[in-house]
Image 1: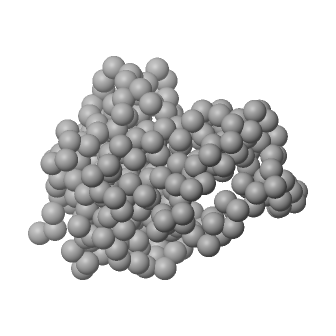
Image 2: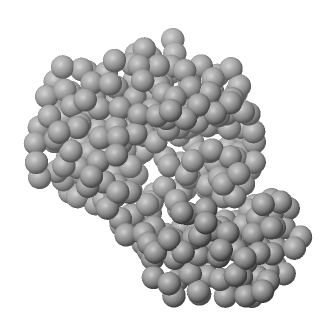
Amino acid sequence: MKPLISIIIPVYNVKDFVGKCLDSIAQQKYENLDIVIVDDGSTDRSGKICDEFAALDKRMRVFHKKNGGLSDARNFGIKKAKGEIIAFVDSDDLVSENFVNAMYEEMTKSDADVVVCGYNLVKPKKEVMSGKEAAAKLLTQQENIDIVAWNKLYKKSLFMDNNIWFPKGQKHEDTLTTYKVLSKARKVVYLDEALYCYVERGDSIMKTGRIEERLEMRELAAKEAMEYFKNDKDLEQAAEVALLLAKYAYVDFAINGRVKKRYGELARRWIKEHKKDFVNNRYMTKKLKIYNLMSTNLGGGLYLAFRKIKHE
């Protein structure tokens, strides 16, 4: 018999979306599921809709709890999950009927700890790598690994055995968690199928969050990664490049007017001051080396002109 797989679905005030989400999960080809629905203190009909679905599908278990945020709901779900393999689905998204089955088959075939699938129209080529390689590629954004939690199938032990949890009370909590989980995996497989459909709502965190807030979180994640990997020189270098990329993001958003000009100026100053720190960094791509030269020579004017033209 195939193993029990837990799908964790945090729910909060998504009455117009949660029914379709749960229906897409109920239609999975992989049937041995433990569907953990965490109603995180919804004040609309979301919780009731979940109860109605659970009454019709014995695989669904609904937990109603006091609101604690997305991270707290995911952590709660991990603890309640009965399966040794878990996946996360956001309650306003949809999944292909082959979402679990395809990733489980690949996990078994490749003896992987994590399998990542494409989403929407993203269809990358299949790739097999170590957890360390996956974490490095995520941090340096050299591959489409994606920092989100929801398009992946994980061995539950990666969280439990390594005491990895989503940071409660933080927005963009995936940013502070995913690289840690991947780094603990023996093997990560990127599957060449788009099995997850991300639905962008007008009031979603990613849609409504301030650009400055998202950039601050990106910078914080890079700094935390540098500390987390301080005993692993290779991944520490990857985290350093993640910080450099975060600084360039400030510059680029300042150029196109989406953040205040001073944020870009402070970032450019930091890049210039730390230029020598990246000379021997193995994750500095040819393009990033050129950007570093353009942004630190002649007052950085060449880089600013180049990026301004690109934005236009």
